[in-house]
Amino acid sequence: MEKETIAKVRQLLAGQKKIVVVGHKNPDGDAIGSCLGLARVLNRLGHSATVIVPNDFPDFLKWLPGCETIVVHEQEEDKSISLINNADLIFTLDFNDLSRVGSMQQFLEDAVAEFVMIDHHQAPADYAVVTYSDVKMSSTSEMVYHFLDAIGELPALCADVATQLYTGIMTDTGSFRYPATTATTHKVIAHLIEEGANNAEIHQQVFDTNSEDRLRLLGLALKNLHILPQYRTAYITLLQKELDANNFKKGDTEGFVNYALSVKGIVFAVIFIENKQEKITKMSFRSKGDFSVNEFARAHFNGGGHTHAAGGRSNLSLSKTVTEFISILTNYKQQLTNAS
Image (spheres, rainbow, N blue to C red):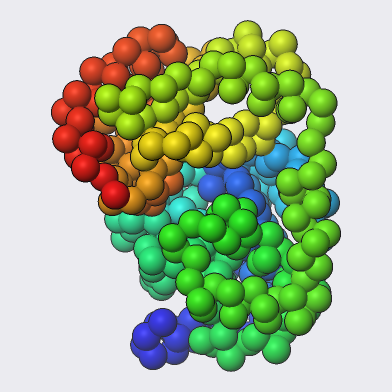
């Protein structure tokens, strides 16, 4: 962070403030971990900080300390709106465009509070008085750590904050195996463990507490795996009726797309998930080497994200979306063939 940015943040945090910390729609581990961690530190510093997310989050994150304090906008709309309207300062974490908050967007756009953005996705919008954006960073949770370090508040870390930030970094780096995981990331993780993050327990809570329904859904997803060797691409499909038959809960398909990417020789993987309620087909993209799924998602499927991990959506049926996807691949055949 630049000196001018640090000075501005300190100015914004002068005195006791009413603060809202906002995560994106369909919050993942990084969104929940970074929001909880920052809010906890702000509260320890004497502010009144509350985390708000647009909709519910996966059960495998609901053990995190402080998650019971999160206001879910869809469930407590009046409380959420009141907190936003009365806030002195609003932090937006793990997203960089207000379109990512679903039905909360208009309320944030109408807010009188000043905004601080902390995010590691590409192409940030210009709505914040302070924008801390770094696309090379492993996760927003790691950015929160560096943010606290820059403003001199790392001593406010505690075991709960360490646990929250560790969880965010771990989930967004695929357990520290993605290319954005650096030596600095590991140094941050080491400090968080020193501060009380129990790495073995965190891994167990997130990855080793599967329901029977989720495992059966994973088995079905693997049966629906398709390989397109000519494009070095693999994809998985899940229809709404398949989700319903396995009592699908939010977060159950987290990580499924990585199984497709793990196939030998594959550099591009996708999972297509039918959502009858929203009348869309949702997609998660993953890649290896120099193939950018961020660029692919932005160009074709109203999405985006990172070079190797992105999301998208289509208003077509799942089968028509898959057909369109395969037709688009012909334009990328040489690029995918040569990807390394």
